[in-house]
Image: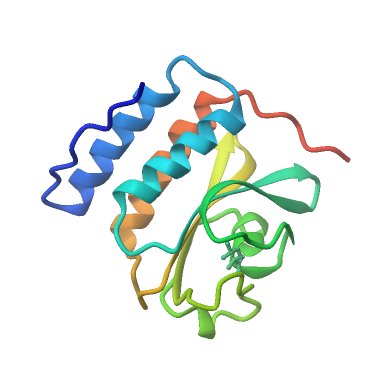
Length: 168
Ligand code: SME
């Protein structure tokens, strides 16, 4: 059984270093993407304060994201690439920190409580396979340290799983 190490981080970079270590431990003997995304979303949800959603959208077919394992309220099932924060992160192949979701054109409001958001692409062998999406009810909850930390988490997951190629 997974016993989460107590997180005693004094700074965000330290917190993300500890989370990365814990994630490596969780995924080291498993290559199934659903299993690893499920455990990763539970890990992030349990360790990061002030979240109302933490999970994944997966590029299951070309041009469209489908919701993957997550913690939080039920969310939009499918997001076209190029739409919302998640779809824009895939289209532009970059992480996006949104301080105020109301000022992001095309933001998709799955939960009216969300005020800020962080979306980070997950890559496997250079190809984007999905995104990590974190939502917060607190405005400007995420900064560059969160982005860097979640990019590290995304890199671990990208390498740790056997990702199916997207359907045409
Ligand atoms: N807000 C996201 C949609 C996903 S939910 O927040 C879980 C977006 O604009 O892409």
